Length: 188
Image (cartoon, rainbow, N blue to C red; front, side, top):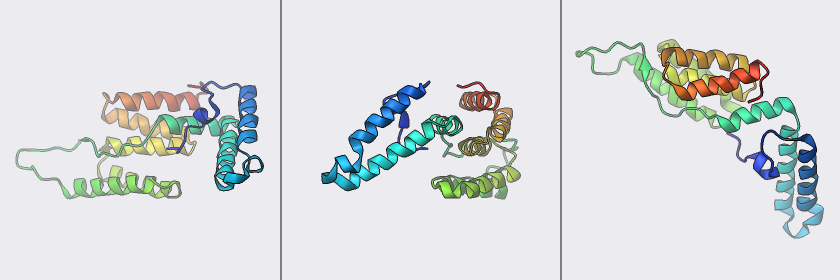
């Protein structure tokens, strides 16, 4: 998830008008520029860099789509229910595959914390699904990370799989709707 809501930084809310964004950008740069704040130079530099980054994202339609997906959606950190595993009265313990898949899922969650490790997080969640195809939260998290990377087509595929295994997952349905909007050109 992004650290700060850039819409709040500019005091603008979707949908945004590019002229309003430019005006807000100029005003913030003017207020926070290091030349105007010599007594707090270090924080003024940080503020200015954040304002420039925010403007760079919100002024570019493709970057804004990805950013909007990121601020609206997050991965699931709990293991959740595993579908397709047959349990009998005699089999109360978790299988070796279940234990391994749960460990891989947790590793993926930990890797996701750093953007540089998102590919490793994906790898861990794919391992979960290979072990247990009905691992809904692994499918969901893959859908989220693909969306974070701007790959909304793969995001849709993963979220559809999560819903296939758990048709009552309304959060996944909502996220799928958002991702489909980006794939098919409808801004949500």
